[in-house]
Amino acid sequence: MQSVRGIKNLKKYGLKNLQIDCVITKFNYKNLEENVKFFKKLGVDELHFTLMRIGGNAQKNLDKVFVPIKEIQPCLFKVLETGEKIGLSVKTCGFPYCLIRGFENHAYEINFLKTFSEEKTYVSDELFEEIDWQKERIAIKAKTETCRECVYFCICKGI
Ligand code: SF4
Image 1 (spheres, protein in one colour):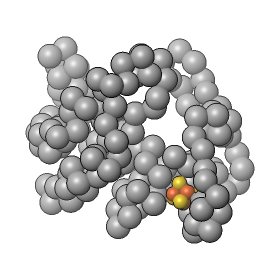
Image 2 (image 1 turned 90 degrees about the horizontal axis):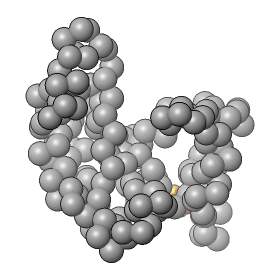
Image 3 (image 1 turned 135 degrees about the vertical axis):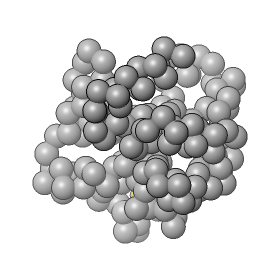
Image 4 (image 1 turned 90 degrees about the vertical axis):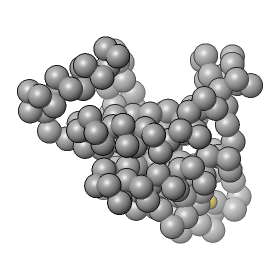
């Protein structure tokens, strides 16, 4: 409720390009459609559906919160289309390109292509710490042998 008030205030005072991150879990993956409509109504400009990172509390409660990508895909693809229909920019975040085929242009990571291609470090301020995403991603993501044949090899974070 507090977050909703916060979003309304930010829009009221003219914030442009308001982006919301929504981590997909077992609790919400079937309700992504509702999220899209809800945030559109609130005036959010861009909504990111983020693949859960396995670590910390997520790792401790894996059975309760984790949902396999295969189960997420139909719901995710549907809301990417819904976003287009209702005029809300909906992006995927953390999904490898091979698992969002047909929707690759919705990958949030496309924003980093220039950075990646120049081999620069992308620094993200997550709460109180800055992370070196180019180093971090190697630690938390992996690629398989098959990845070597993939057209996205150089720009993909892996799975
Ligand atoms: S590099 Fe690997 S994980 Fe990334 S899109 Fe290609 S096949 Fe998928």
